[in-house]
Image (cartoon, rainbow, N blue to C red; front, side, top):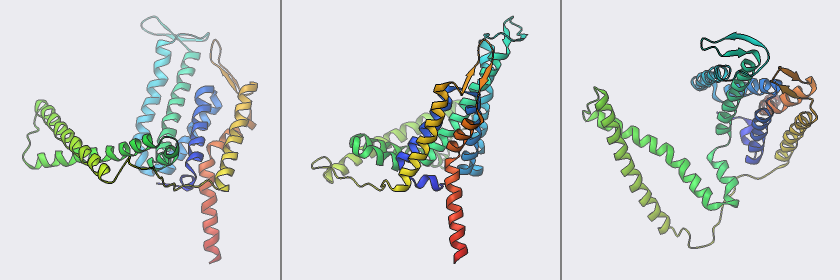
Length: 289
């Protein structure tokens, strides 16, 4: 699924995701992590709908693992909770830091999933086409080849299964997997040779390169960049001045401000705000008809 934010220039999309990913990850402030995590989950399900439940469960499992690993291996902190059977202490500060790390991993993975949905291969080619045209072409071919390769594996697997392929034990499964991989690799090499011959026949590399750019920076994109960098600058100023800070060791201490939390929340909710604005305009136009 796409939304209004997907229609913006690729630079706007990339700048937004860089800001919302970098600020919580590098600052590790409790309030920013919580806001980032909640907004990432909301935007993730806005894009994925029910199709994102499985991945969300995997990310939730990684959150639990990350939260439990830190207090098991890190014993820093002044507030003792209990002792493990091995004799190592578990401290409140280590447990809180592990939970915060888990929240950071949780939010980062959800934001990255949203990033992959919004910033498509077409947008990457648009950005890299002028700066690195050869790398842009290579990236486009990779993005095209991955689903094609996966689809070919499925075709070969179904064809071998229809021909009576044995798949009763572990030995048969490993053998069939290797044979399928070998057939698919041979097909991929032959396909790459055909692609090279086709590009040479079309005159690739013999003349000056010309590119087509589907995106143009408009006033709407500039306004969105000002909005994103403005709120990001406000949060960055709060971090630099010490208004947003979390100390984990030796004692857990949080410094925060509702004003700066609201600024970061507005930043994280920008795509949903754009979607709501477009829906409001659409309903108003329908009402006028």
